[in-house]
Image 1 (cartoon, one colour):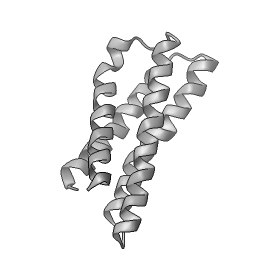
Image 2: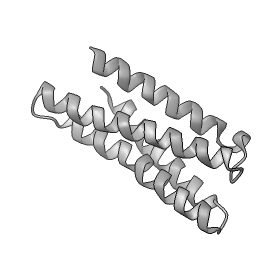
Image 3: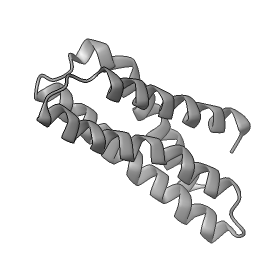
Image 4: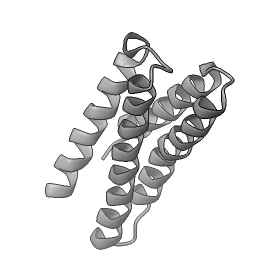
Length: 111
């Protein structure tokens, strides 16, 4: 893994924070927003823990948690779109980055 990926996960977390802050002030938007905020910002934290793993097994476990959080984040963003809280066009790049990170983490876990 690399410092570039660490920066990417930090940038991903910041984009998630911006998405949360831009949500409408409705009850449903805030509840779903808190879900995406929690899962989306934990990706980088779990990746950072994976980088500092003491063993290959610990690395895979932490990276696996980060992958789970990415999958959950993808779900919440898609739900925000499906519920017509956020237009797909506004989150297309974020969805693309989520899918790219998922692909990277899956490939890393298969090695």
